[in-house]
Amino acid sequence: MSANDRPVTGQPTAAYDSAFLKACRREPVPHTPVWFMRQAGRSLPEYRKVREGIPMLESCTLPELVTEITLQPVRRHGVDAAVYYSDIVVPLKAIGVELDIKPGVGPVVEHPIRSRADLAQLRDLTPEDVSYVTEAVGLLTAELGPTPLIGFAGAPFTLASYLIEGGPSRTYENTKALIYGDPQLWADLLDRLADITAAFLKVQIEAGASAVQLFDSWAGALAPADYRRSVQPASAKVFRAVEGYGVPRIHFGVGTGELLGLMGEAGADVVGVDWRVPLDEAARRVGPGKALQGNLDPAILFAPKEAVEAKTREVLEAAAGLEGHVFNLGHGVMPSTDPDSLTRLVEYVHTQTAR
Image (cartoon, rainbow, N blue to C red; front, side):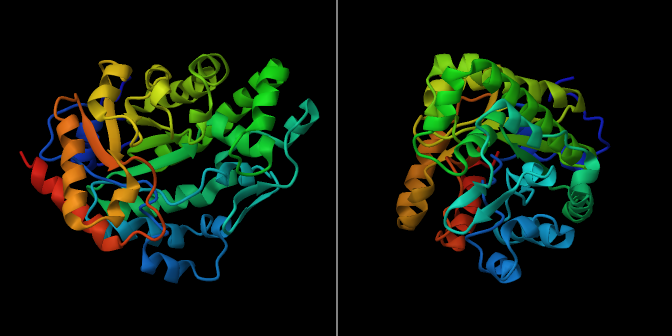
């Protein structure tokens, strides 16, 4: 089954026929659909209010809070899809990995993986481990109606980089040392993470998510040959595991201009593009048969309205010949972004692309 088939998850027909899902399936759309990575959160004052005093990972386990935060940008901005409020390390925390998200730092792992014995902390993920996800997705789909819900997970490489480094890294020296120094341990680690990631996506899809995005945020740190040999097989395993559901699968990474074709080959229906490569050139690199997502530089939103509109037109013009296009930023919404600039951007894209 492909993303062109009607899904087997019983999602409502109204969501199936939404502009977002049509664009993912490379079908004609009434306007170019828009959503933003990190739209559910940091830039919204209403988000900061409801999150006050609640640690990040705890907030991800509270279904009613997750529902409210996920809905906030849909209400405020009029985006064409909601994205489930969570974090890429949630499934790791759910299976007992000792980690926390430190404010101003990011995920910090208490016992980094550096040897084969360390793999023992990665057991299989079951739906019972994340029952709060099933509950929250159910609440959300009831509220969203015709607006699709995007589920997501961290890709095996990005999860592995956090687990090996013990936290965020700019150089990934420990990760690359393991890739090159113990290829078998690396392959076993990624294979186990692929199973955990696939299980987490399945929970979201079976609960009602209309599409899923795999975030390989740090894959851009790799050369193409290393990506193909050491990373692509695990990402492909994740995409194969959810293929039968028939929901669109999106693949996104940062700084992955040299990897776009390989990321498309991994099995996604939609390839996310950051702001470094124009969409027409990205389409050439990815090849036919894929929709593209992106790719306005998030920093542009701090410029005057006229500059934002000019750069947005550049993105739309580069996307004019694509088989399918979902408008997004080239990475996540920055915390200090003016929410009104996002609302204006959604309206501008809708107006400029109305058919």
